Length: 432
Ligand code: GLC
Image (cartoon, rainbow, N blue to C red; front, side, top):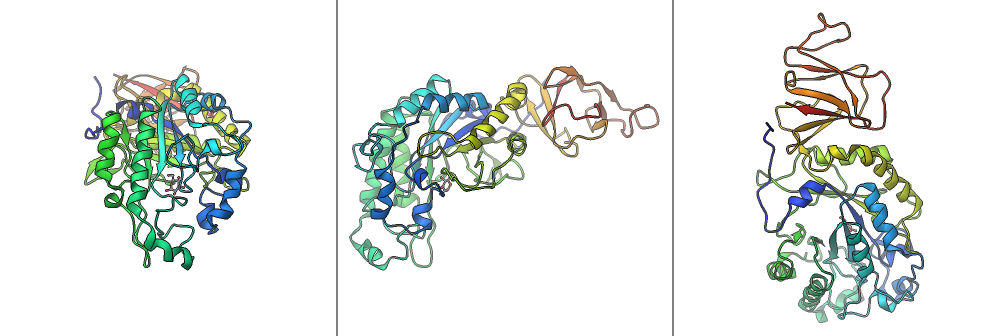
């Protein structure tokens, strides 16, 4: 028998594979990778387009090897990837026919997107496209509170001549290219709808002609998942750079969700950023996410020369090592049924197909882990890392059992070694 779990209501796209796979790679790559100080550098430093062109003129990722990227993602345990086809700066990674501001016109001179899609597909990963709704290059994109020229009165004065709807035509046309030239696309991840400020209006579903856009996308890619940032909820909610406290709900209903996270705060390559998360923290973030029924989309910002930097590689490898032994507690898993109480300092995940419950021990306790409500329900327990048996006693209080310091009628007590046997240990419980 297996226990009932939370299942979000179906959405227009296909999300079953997504809810099974749980772990993906985000990639932010563009001409901001040369500035190497955040992908918002053009806006943050209010750089005009003419000055910013120096990055375009020097974009030449001579070490770019998408096969190496795809292998690194796969080895980390990631099952899909999402690449910035165009970020807010407006630079396009593919050979679009609608602008000259594209990779084929840089010194590199070649399309980078197609080989990337092919390489990831060859490694068996699903394909996602990030696409920016903001565009700080396009001549018809009007100034808003995020725009690099938001304090440049002369530039702002020209807004009267700008026709946002022409930009939106461009957005639709480019989307059509992306939906028709790269085979099956599994996710389209738009970013984002800027809010109004005191001075500037915002942009949202009406400006983007979002309904029409969604129709267009689905006419080419009926199963595709679309995110929530067009201001029309579709298949997935995308909390960013924080860990939600529980399963994400919209209007009281649980939804499919994916937390997107960085290694170090910046999405684009940032040479001098020093707040890199440890492998241990990243593993716990992945586990925490799945324990709340979500996915983790973890970002890499490749360098200007086209490589993942060493700090990223080290973390991907660390996660891959852990996933090698423990991915069974991630793939196909979700939030544990409510009747299983999570012990202190732990996270639970549950696989309803195999009827196994996974206890991730974030802080190793001394000798005993008490699982309330599980007495009589577990057939066998093992450390997932090496398949070594974890012995347990059931329903016994302190008085009756030599080594058990606490417990009660419904409690199952795992007998643990004194020393923590590995990083983020997982105990696999085969339920009856
Ligand atoms: C934000 C930022 C952006 C990043 C994205 C990822 O909305 O504008 O730079 O690409 O989040 O979620």
